[in-house]
Image 1 (cartoon, each protein chain N blue to C red):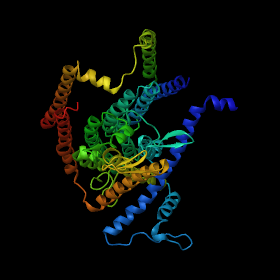
Image 2: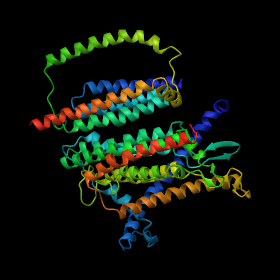
Image 3: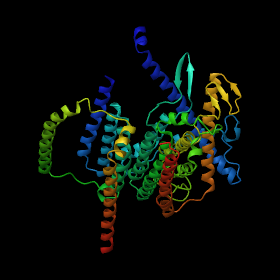
Image 4: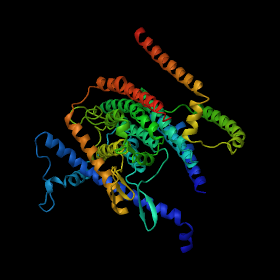
Length: 166
Length: 372
């Protein structure tokens, strides 16, 4: 009972924050609302006693990725100026498109429900995850770090080239 | 009515005990924080050959400045609460809470003692015994950045934003080192629960040496303390907000909002001290003191009452915390400030490789000793 209540509260918070984020015009405030949604999702994981998942959600998404987002967004001119809203026709078209996507998502979610309800879907401890990552999947795991390294070097190289060209 | 209590005795007892623990522990921390603001001024006075604050008095009783934290608090409450005209009002108000709340929440996982038996019930002397306590610490300390950054941005002041950018860069960088220095301890203790780690530090090495974290990981301790002070934004890493020279992220703040930022910084000193004590100096462990009493390596024993043992353990934890808090105050008034490029070089080119090296060596030694 308590768990269901906690899930409903955190789920509601996440949905509310996401909706507010979509309708927020200021990019920094939108990013903060997304942060709220991410933290609420971490709360859902915690209520399902998936502690590691909750903590990783906070460390990676809320602590690292959103920080970089917000730092980058605050220095954009849009964060310092109030922009007027779009024309009425644009709003109507936007809302119509959103309604279509929502309907599609609802249709998909019924199929997902069956998968998520299966009892095999359960949280495993840190040790079990570590055994899997550094055991049978160690090659893929190390390969992933190489790919990330390559993308970092690529990003730096791309931006550096643009600066010398100016 | 009685049936309800009987039926839910366990959960009611748990909730009541948790509430009492939160009240006692947080009040102790709040009181200690207030005293720490006085200690900061006294230590600086001592090191600069001054007397320091000693004038605030109640009915002519000054007690060498003991009432200054109270006087400061009253002054802060009655100062003008200024909000810049262009500021984001809501976020401007929220920013101090973003700075304070994650820090306060972290005390929930810090064990301040082993356990006490009251009326036959066993009470663990920590608020939440999370099996992943160490990750919880890292997760919440990562959220402390938002207080700094929102404070700078919501003020809508370019100088405040510059301070916030410096702060964000510094805190993101040192957070990486902070996390990596603790990996060695994770490998040795094989658990991320802070209470488990403290219990493991009660063992003896070679029959006489307490197996504290500092013995296994002396190098990681120095890295941890450096990164933690940097994460705490204190001298020599106070480029984020040097009160006297550099304008920082809370330049538009006044009154209690400003006080909350300052308070968060002092609470963080205690938090870092407690973490250093817990992870590297045995937490509440007193060498050779176990549940029945002292058991010395020579074989002599000194049986002690359970409550005396518990009180000594809590006292040992408090003493270690006070020692590290004092150490951080002394460091603050001894070292000059780094330049920003020096700060970043220290983090990415010195501390980070050393932290990785520490993990490598720890792993190699454990492999050589056959501990894996």
